[in-house]
Length: 457
Image (cartoon, rainbow, N blue to C red; front, side):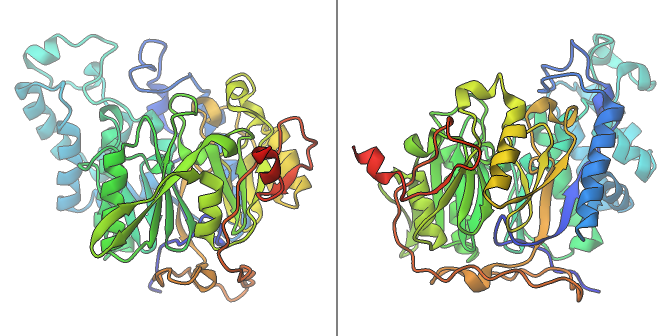
């Protein structure tokens, strides 16, 4: 059966997800290597794998197909063009000298598909590279790598996202650029994704896919952060408009949030009219709406983020569920913060079980919470959404606001699956955003109009 992939929202029923089960790349982490590999801790790998397996099984129990990066990479390494692309991504590392680059290229070209896929992800040490010669190789320390491992690959949502039927592959910082290159290689060459276009790529301006939210059909929110530049947002917006994949892009500067925070850890879409958010940020975050008029990009004046989201989502009242943890406290109480949950369906969220306070608030607001362990997976502060990338969701296009493009999105047919509930057809009315106070009881959830008067006082 021919499969059609794509998404037009964060909350349509999840049909297919891509994930990377933690593997040998995490075994390379040591106190001396973790910082340069951009990983904040030393996880217990076997337990991290168990936790990942439990989350995957919970998704399968809900009818979600789980695809694994390593299995797909092993498949595409059978094709000469894909092998060449993956090897080029490895050999582009700036620390390789001419002699070592030549020797390493010959070595990689001789590996079988399974071993090549393993090495480009798990890396290669000097002791493991017997053909190594030359000055650069001779000067390598035993703690150095011939090929650096990719311990952050499990946080797959950083590397790419689907928007409509196309894929936006991130342009990440140098230490993680190979992750994005391998994901693009997978989508370019695996038969399952034949014909899928990449609307953005690793060679473009800096853009982290974790800063992108598909808040409604035809509407993308893009955070401007330490890892996503305004130039990257401009380039993405231009390409989305040209491909008729968006009518609006909300540019959201994240100056007020802690260092290295992404938009998807600040705001999580729960339903077509509901979000989960840090308590105080609803007051301070602003958004500029980017549109295209007569072929030119236009930037609006700033307006409160949640107000602009309500307008873009075509609703007159945006419900905000508080995480219960303010950003300054999140570093000390990180396990209470569940702001990076994965929507399995509308108002059905996959969350780490240690997000106690947030999970309680979600359930009090009528959201079903599927709890999974995350003590080891959470080392790098990534939740279930960061650990996966939705490949296919049921479309919400039929409920989109007037003027939204009709995206070519469909899910794998499932005769036994109930149809998703239609989104309320409400005219787009501006709403001023406000968020429940952190001291509110767990049941705290308010429409964005509820505290508008308080802000004005």
